[in-house]
Image 1: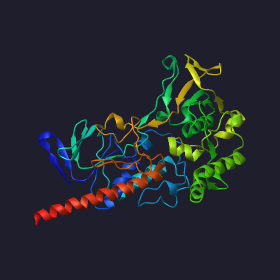
Image 2: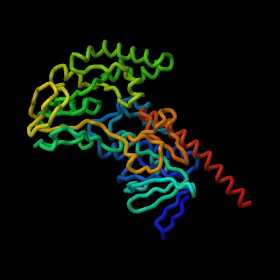
Image 3: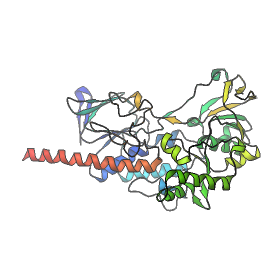
Length: 397
């Protein structure tokens, strides 16, 4: 249900407007569809799940078993492996959109959104259209924009510098010496991928980092953690996971990978920083094929100087420095989000704001958290939707 006002280029939508057609936007649209509520998704790119389709490397797989990454009302196909590939996940997303009749409006970059208290409607402005609705669902998520750090001398470097959002395969770096800035899951996997093409990656470890085996005795580490949390306090579960990891992987401190004092699950909940789930990089660090280096002090024309006084030459630099929310750049007049673009209320209370404002995909708990919030948001809006329609029917009588 929507009404177009051509004269003023205003599109009034009687259901909620969702900003973002990634997994979060699709999940909440599907939940609303199941409840008979028509939503409208505005997507800045030309496809669904654009982060996955346009800004991920070829070897990427889900870090968690597929049953933790399913969206509401649709399981992964049974023939998919335990850890689906990038292409398999994209095909799942496309099937999901088709099943629930989700048809986003593509190439609609939201420049601004604000609430008009006099009318009780949200106004959403794109480059060529103005939309209005009672409800606004922010589904742009935690990973909307690449984080590009300011490193002294970066502009001097003569070789290519790229963020992992532009990295596809190590084939482009055959036999090169590559500086990888960032030691999270992306940094480790990119380093591993570079080794496949006889490149020599040097990974920058600036801070402490938790490295856990992806599986323990054939069971995913995440699954073990989730089961233990049903019975034991968080800090004790963290101690058990670290103990098992040390038995499985040995001491990572000796490799230049110091563990934080805060446990992996507690740190993830507090800061959103995920532990590294090792898929083979650690063994290559042990053999020296992946070299661990200190924080960068300065980039030079031909390489980098490090905090420990060493200087090395590099052919290329890859920034595995993650992503950030872009909500503060376009959502106006709301104090629901922090200056970093995350809901001020932590999970599980960060899904609902005031005046019909909602957020999905900001839980720091991956697709499992996304699904949980999508169900809550759809239920809450559906209740309001039905009440409004009931009033309208009574007025007609």
